[in-house]
Length: 161
Image (cartoon, rainbow, N blue to C red; front, side):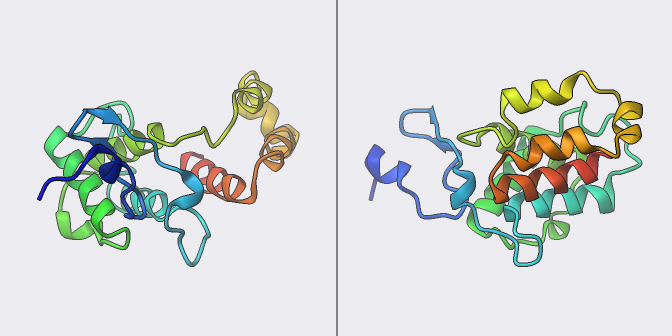
């Protein structure tokens, strides 16, 4: 049985399909429709990827700069689409593949988790300036987002810091 393009785009998976293979049209992830972590209240794919990276890849040079192998990246994405609770440790793959999958999924979001206006507000600040001001400019920018985006940004920034 084949599916029509409209059936393919209305997938009920928590992450939805990342690509419509029938037309090769990218499909966007809707942040508010992603399955959320019970503990942190952030999209589960973000929590899973970052926790895996922190456990297996913090000492990896160029972790976010060097791409993972395409087949491993696709495997991570497919596993998380099929089951957002999937234990990535079962894959036994390098953290670079999970980091690349994380970046790819973030690019697929239907809207940025930090708007361009908010990004511009923070872009010129150095880490020293942020520390001197107790990160208040960043906090102010994040408070102008939804609760979901605030929690998600906070989790990602803690990971990157």
